[in-house]
Length: 489
Image (cartoon, rainbow, N blue to C red):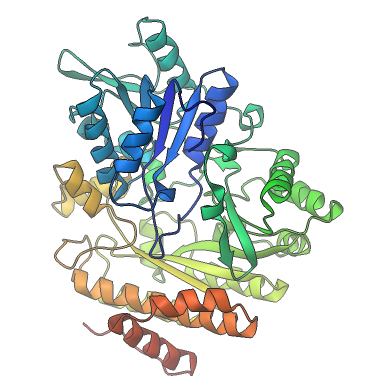
């Protein structure tokens, strides 16, 4: 939230995304890279981060807007509760400064452009990658020129919603300046993890080469995967270590190891530079390779997060995951063999999923030597194959209002009265989700005790003080003792 003289041409706002202990979940790289790109083009840019004002009230944010007096406000909007936060801010700014342009960018306006533009307080949206589009829009607005041909731009013209074509040109990430970490209070994003005590998230690639039928990436118009080269990856970590004293990095990107040569070169930089920074990354089961994992281990990689999704081969085939249960078990066995901890990311509640198939997922969870378990409940996203199936066969309709969509598309939770796409009740899915998290909490608590990480242990104990959650934790402890269970209805 730092601007040199408290004024700016554009104020970029990161809508809130707290977790339970009011610590931000991940660095807002969409905002930070936009800020650095615009700053490099001599645009005077400020950043306000709602994650670090720790208030449900937007008063601090609005006061900051009044102090900065920007001509344009850009708000980064993912999905879930951040939608309501962004909407409150937009309405408040328009009420006190009707001439200020409001621009929404990010995942949500990309997937739901018409819903967003129907809101009177929002002037523009930018779909897909934002750097070129936002810069061109600002140039035209500031010089009072025609902006109507800017690629990726959505706007209203005489009451009609206009969505311009998505540009084919994508940013070369190696030409972009470093993220504008200096414009936020980065202290609040440094996390204590089991593999390091001062961990930051880092994003070094964009896009995803996979076509999973459920994933909102399918609905994004910038699917081509591209990345920073290994040398620039190393320079970013070196900068973060020297300036913010971090000792851990969580690579927060969909397909970190799509380019195997890049990973090998990065590991060589880490080894040759004797960089004392531990790290983790997401991966895909079909990328599992013992030789490469050994090299990563030597370069201080500590754990890998795999998208497992389901324990049912039928479901895996339906969602076009390009893996089966046998390959999943082999990948986790390889991680254990080379000394890497692993995380298993599951999704439940797929269209047509049955209790028997959910039990297959439970059985797989029990067999995998995964250190971390993360479970989400499926929601249909526009632009994906499963969305079209749900509309045609499961009578799915997108909630009408932005506030209703904010509740429905929450990543972490679903209310019992919400209709899900599977063949089982939502209450059953929620019970299963809680059991997964309880199993993870037990594993994490035991590891904290083993490695004497008392700060992290206290955090997990706080999460278990809820009686309902505690019952699932106790059940999970029985599982660790060898007592198999089934989730009851």
